[in-house]
Image (cartoon, rainbow over all chains, first blue to last red; front, top):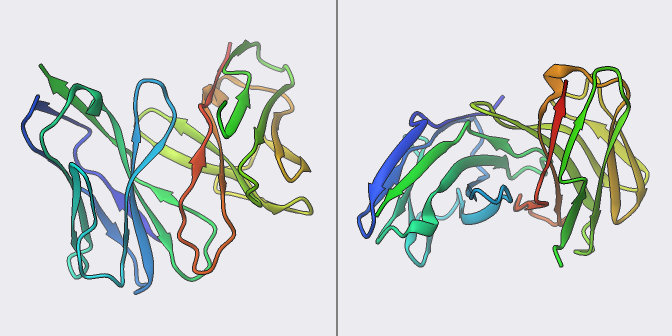
Length: 115
Length: 115
């Protein structure tokens, strides 16, 4: 079974600085997708960024980018120019590309942004 | 209006009571899911449905049941609530596509407290 591990339960960053959240996963598959979801205090889960395993290029979305290391099974999220609105829980998630139904989530990292 | 709406947003009940959490969506997606979130555990899948006639158990279905009343409606029931079912519950939807990109669209969550 696939597992997703987020080793940092909590992190903090100064406003305008850069922070990297770590995620590792375990799978024997070669075709899969990885995600970072954000959960602000409002509770609703929001997709931040998605990475297809077959793509070597790291995904980017504005201030958010990933460092995808397929061989190392690592998928970290970098937030540049951190803003107060970035404060949230961040969840890493995995899904098999082989028609799977189930998204496997990590346990989350709580990010605080210090003004 | 939210694309995925959950009711109630918050509920306090007593042990042994029957509780129903409701979810409706306007996204036109075929797939619907119920997840449970506990602090430090991330999100875990309770049940999922790929269409009105298709209901499947997820990782932690014991003590729960579901009903897919229509394509847009998916409800979760706790027949006899117990305190360890105190959690934040999320409904989510996704598109049935090939390949399965796995992106989920979440409701705002229903916080359930069982006393």
